[in-house]
Image (tube, rainbow, N blue to C red):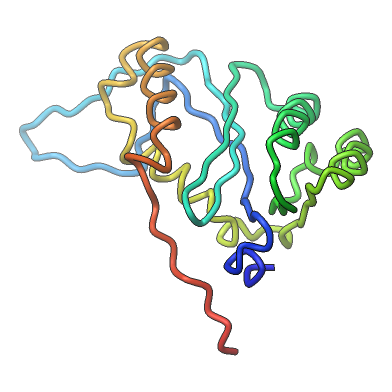
Amino acid sequence: MEQRAINQDIDLYYADESGVSEQGYIPYGWQFKDEKVSIPAAHGQQINCFGLLSRQNEFHFKTTCQSINTDFLISFFDDFVLKLTKYTVVVLDNAKIHQSKAFKKRCEYWQKRGLFFVYLPPYSPHLNIIEKLWHELKQRWLRPEDYFSFETLRYALQLALLAVGSELNISFSPFNYSH
């Protein structure tokens, strides 16, 4: 499948959802003994995002303040399938919403239009390259001052997501077929 994507026979995307909340994202930190470091945070709203990312940093996404459920995904892929110009494969994890009866039933419609899904083995987020995008987004692309209010967070998030593939890019290692 990766070789077909390299040859441009198909489009290949990796998909997943993630959330950004007013609580902020602090994976680790350090400070001098006499220094105060803080990020104002509020327990509050979250923005959820579903996205598709290619190795060429082509990125399609949709955000919501609601939970991402099967209906949300069906709506997303119903819109996405209208933009296809060639066979397209989307790599998904095994989340319940990706495996629901309604989602599986809609796959027939999408397959007729050239959209196919491949599922990763359970517990293998390291195989889904979009995880790197979520990490970069939360750790580097969103700044502490973006968390001052829900509106500043939503604005900064939209700017960052819209910049993926132009100002913001991720370098991926080439495929290695020598086994």
